[in-house]
Amino acid sequence: MTAAFSLEGRTALVTGANTGIGQAIALAMAGAGAQVICAGRRSSSETVARAGDQAEDLILDLSNPMAAAGVFAEREVDILVNNAGIIRRDDAVDFAERDWDEVIDVNLKALFFTSQAFARSAMTRGARGKIVNIASLLSFQGGIRVPSYAASKHGVAGLTKALCNEWAEHGITVNAIAPGYIATSNTEALRNDPSRNEAILARIPAGRWGAPSDIAGTAVFLAAPASDYVNGAVLNVDGGWLAR
Ligand code: NAP
Image 1 (spheres, rainbow, N blue to C red):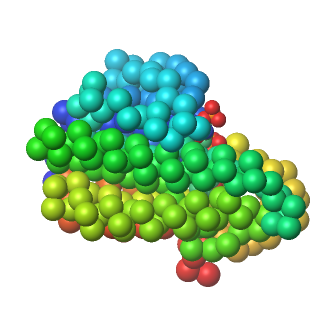
Image 2 (image 1 turned 60 degrees about the horizontal axis):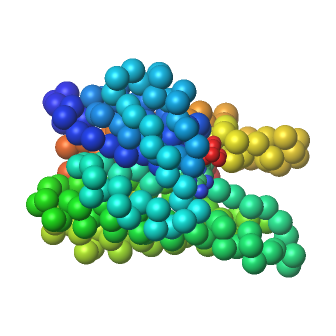
């Protein structure tokens, strides 16, 4: 059974691997035996150092949504983790076009075109593939003061299903993880706001914020043979938040 959860012999590319959830996923995938390409708009040197000789650094700035177009022609990648993401907070009535475009470009448009480049390469080689998207509770809920983020993450859930439908016959699975409230720089503003922090904690059945490592096991599962018949799914890893 262990082999079903092993990533031995696989190569994974994780976007936004220098910190937070992406770093935890990259380290867990290396721990499960994968070679990991740690991609980000700046160096993932700390992640690479911690993963030993199983990781390499790749500068990939996804504010250009087509940035990954050539990446998969140069490397045979079996697993793509679309983790890189940004958030902008403001009242919807004041929300700026720039904060709309920047979030949609990184969180949604880059996720689509990076997935397309990955799938084209896999199909050309006749290889199987695994895509793991990082969605959000705001793939299901609206949130407060984060309209472009909510729109982008609803889009990630939709694309996960749309790409599953087209690529399953090519041996490519496309799934997503919807993390709950995880303590990273993405949520720093919420944790620093005493009333929001208290309200969030009160609703989480687990009674605590998640850690980036709480997401890693599900990512390994969705990249491993154990999940071969899981496709088009959005798995909540949220300490019970959505069950409440
Ligand atoms: P984080 O610590 O802010 O990490 C975000 C990662 O994305 C960083 O590595 C960041 O690089 C990278 N990134 C941002 N813009 C990029 C670009 N233009 N090109 C390439 N990489 C870029 O936050 P996180 O919480 O780990 O977020 C990871 C993912 O989880 C995001 O998609 C986020 O929406 C999602 N998520 C987080 C939570 C949560 O509670 N934390 C909940 C649900 C979903 P830099 O370090 O250079 O900025």
